[in-house]
Length: 540
Picture 1 (cartoon, rainbow, N blue to C red):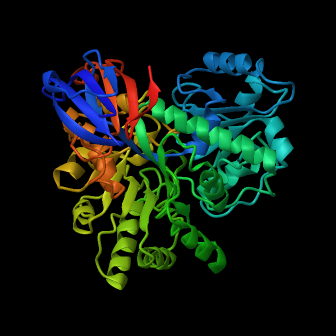
Picture 2: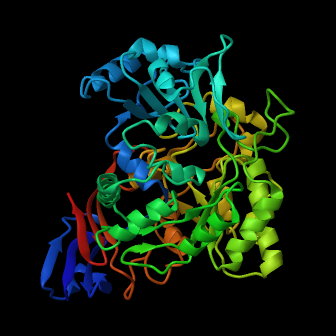
Picture 3: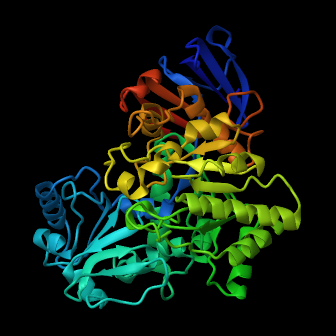
């Protein structure tokens, strides 16, 4: 044997267990006392042995960028906001953009919303660009707005907005990607990390030095995933630029990466054809394609989630639908006919319904197949559409760190904007799993914290928002399955990984502490080892 892990504990039994690896595959699993000899032995020290995690929804380029930005997730009042920005500004060169992320909509206190004046009060002598926690809005200070030439406003495509104030000037809030890019393209990344989100290529032609920096950023993100026990990831930012970067990195990647191509309604036929052709490209190294990504809507906090029956404070407003029914059916049918898997961002219940309608149209046109098309997020869904997930064979790709009240997120303003009538079917992991719909977990990092153990805590610890609301918590075994076997199934890899079974790829992790105590404490367990096909890619 090439490698044996000894003195480990099985889950859930807690028995003394060992695992042997040969040629990258699990060659033996059994009682520790019967472990075979091997060229190398790793003493687990009593840690729990588990299949490695699959991160089913992540943004690697954005995440790698965020590792060098100011994390504002813990900020919840004006004083701490000012302190955080001013301390971070001291680490930057004079005039350099100050970029932050993970900012809650009410980070300056309950009932507030940031604007350029609030940012100016903290830092006014340099441009500031702060991304909201869901990455669907940003706030810029006056210096940044002036630099971008949008202090007096700007035209943006439907579904995005440079918010204007009663004084006729921009408030500093930029809603959705097209508006955000007006400032982000001036930041140190030049927008190269984010344009894929809106189906575009980076502005200009990135030179060799830019490409080298961008590849280093992506590699840094991949190693961060390995540090958290993740050996496979679906990177949700697909354009031709990133396809080129990842292809050049394919032999250097520490983890497997699947890269979808992002389609939008306004792309011309030539671009759609080029993206579909790229999605059909053969795997290389640890990189594969095979998937299309689309956006059906935005998020509740910017009133850009597409809903059924309007918003509580504006029943006539359903929120923007980012792809028309005709165009979505056409794109789904094209991608499905090309043998590609489809993943669509859908937060509002209207968006989820629209995606299901498009998948039904593709199935009607092309006939049924094992497509494993996905819906990303499913923050809300109607009772009528829940069984349609199962009946159409659609996978639910969900993030337990997303519900308000989880992962440090405040309840407001999201749950009020959403409306109480939607709470019973909001983030309904337990109901989706109970009806037999395949469920895969991820974090949407850097939108949310990356650590899968923290994510498992959120899946088990979530509380209903009001008495009488359904309990959507999952048991530990089910949550772990969604992060391992579920993610493998989503990637058509259920016969290769996701379980500790002889013949499977040796994607294995060791966890110290108490997994069961994660239901109460997010820090009850931590990772100590990550193996991908028997190779140590991270060790504490």
